[in-house]
Length: 144
Image 1 (cartoon, rainbow, N blue to C red):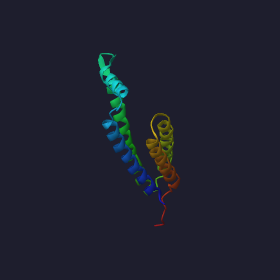
Image 2: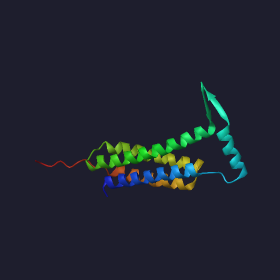
Image 3: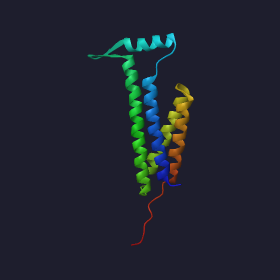
């Protein structure tokens, strides 16, 4: 199969990852008393950095939404890599390899700190980027 298809499949998966992460992240509410206590403490305990004051909950929210933004960017990048691969741009290959490595790191981190669902999504994305990167071929030159 052509690299463009693999990169586009990775783009769709990354977009689904972004939507799922954003929804799950914003909709999550702890269901135990201990969890609610931590949640409330994160949002009420403040810290100072210079002249600014922040809550741990704010940092948590900011980091979570940063991940969603990164996933949207990754979807765009994968789609763009598909266009590059379709045009025979060999520069898509090393970027595809970098995305493969990045998803492998995401897989390990998900297993360690999150759950099996994001780990599986990272593994599938890694596989898509791997196959896409390997599938990139130079443009055929036609005699004219």
